[in-house]
Amino acid sequence: MAPKKSSPANAGDLRTDIILLVGRVLMAVVFLPGGFNKLLGLGAFAASLEARGLPVSLSYLLALIGGGAEFFGALAVLFGFQIRCAAILMAIFVVVATGIAHRYWEFADPTTYRFQRSSFFKNVGIFAGFLFLFVSGGGRWSLDTMWKRR
Image 1 (cartoon, rainbow, N blue to C red):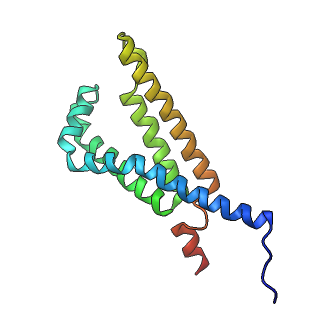
Image 2 (image 1 turned 90 degrees about the vertical axis):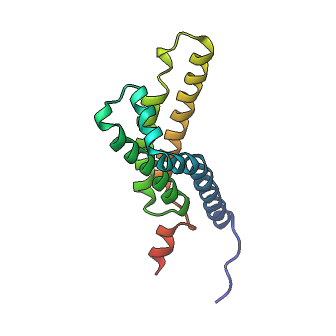
Image 3 (image 1 turned 180 degrees about the vertical axis):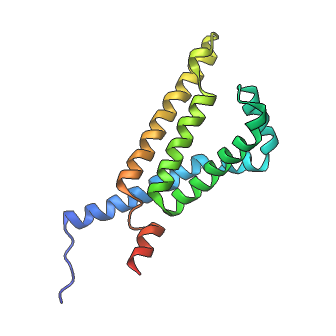
């Protein structure tokens, strides 16, 4: 059998897989350090949630859920493990975190307002990225795909 000739379609598949891998790595890098630090400092994270108005009785549990979702969801995205579930988990995390931390409309100070508004809409873009990842899947170099081949 003759080797496959390179075609624009084959090259496109390779380019798509490279872009998906790079995108997964970059999205994971955004969340891994924050999730790790939240898990290491659950008390401080819980206190920050209380300061933002979440119930004291739930703050530690919510800190554990939030830190775990952020860290382990980012790991799953990085390795392409259960990528569609991970993408939805991370999209939900971003929506909840944005609603808690970036309520820009509550700030009268113009500098704080602009910073929080910018962070809010940055997170809207990150949310969209997780939706794209949900639709596209993890690509050739993901654990999901590698395990399907076996």
